[in-house]
Length: 480
Image (cartoon, rainbow, N blue to C red):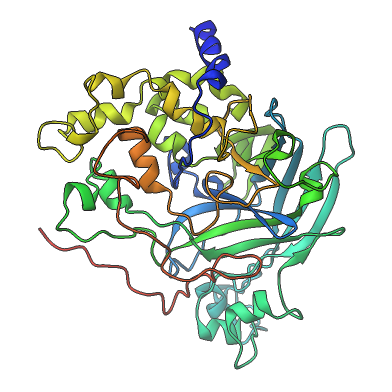
């Protein structure tokens, strides 16, 4: 079996499909059984695009955060190794650059009235507990690693903004001056901004933001009841609307991303990078009675994400956790059959989507449904093989990474920007193939077409996190 998969992967670049104009990815919130129990280490989305003279990479973690979800607000874990990986060129998926991000949270001292202690905080402990310990006092360090070179810390003890709890917390716990917003204080104003500068060029940020993704998860996960298709009279919903996420955003000079050389205009494999993000935990954890834990052993990757929906919609349940623990250079060897025979097509068949009169009946090709159920390497694998618009790069390596040609304007599939609606095309690719003559020329719509709030025009580009006190209400479910 392994030899057969290797032969399939070796022949993929000869399939003649390099000129496909678009492919897709989507969100991967809680996509595997093990990581669903570990939200602090769960990759949700990865974005990468060229912005001026920099490559911007956004790695999001901890999906489906309620802005009002206190008093123990979501935060990065001190026990997780977060990483952003860049591969380079046509033939290798080994890291050319690795950015390791580690967090450290300062302890918060509370006073217990049961111990008859003095109360030097004047009762403010109560407010500290309501706001999850105030500012958390969490910091992070970014270490850049290149093969054959010493590792170097490019950001040291940068501050992480606290949760956007509300105006009272802003004033009392965070000491934000009157007239200034959370966003102005922690991001926009140079004197107080938590955006960190990288020596030699670039910036870094880590903290809570609005989740930029938009998708109708509720409809999709209810046996793929995509509202505009299966239930056209029912209004679509953005399931991630008014929710937050924790983001790590890096601005990397193009010369650094390109190995010391400025990119040149036009498509070139040598200046094409592959971007993916991961999270790892140490192999042994000991739980102590006092609430502290001990961690030992080497790091074990528990989550990864390049093109997000791959694990969620393509990889079988029995292999989802294993997928998360492997690197992209293992994909062709171990997982080729999932792309050749997509499970999601058989699921759609089981609930009658392809039957006469069904919502996807027009997707069935002349050769019958069997042509969608197997032999799909030719139109699905280019998602994880080639992201360029022309095929000129001639990328030979195959793996789940988000490709970015640094010498071309970014636009999916050449990178992925925050505002791109990619779910519709992904659904069509998996359920119909992109070239099928269907009534869905731009993709099978899941409903939402954009984020609920504008993105920032400047770093870190994601919108401000929703405030807990005034977060816009989500749509109430209608009773049956």
